[in-house]
Image (cartoon, rainbow, N blue to C red):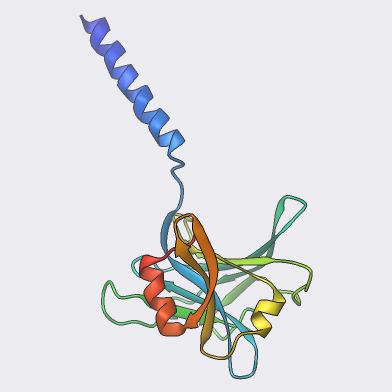
Length: 178
């Protein structure tokens, strides 16, 4: 009888492990990453989240099926706006000329017009990640100050959206693109 109990327990454990492996347990999602421009035309990364503040902003592109990191910046501890617990908070960084407090781990080179880039942010432990946005230099050139380019949509029909900062903040709570 003891053998039957152990066998049943092992079978249950194997089932749980299989479910976890198949479910793709990985980073949890909270918020969105977008692209904007300031009044001088400098492009910016805008991050919005509700409960898990990102520590790192990344810019990447694919090259021959390899993920290439173009820029990596660590956010300062006090760079979020938003005062109510549970409210969507935001932070913005000029990737090329980051303000004081941002730590540059990898410097962004000029954008290549032939490449598609992706911007995303994550917590230091990589357990929480925001929805990413894919963009090209032409996308940046079409933005006006106050507009944010981000990935939005419904489950299987994600699309690139241009909206106001307020609409972006609302979407960060309910419309993640991963």
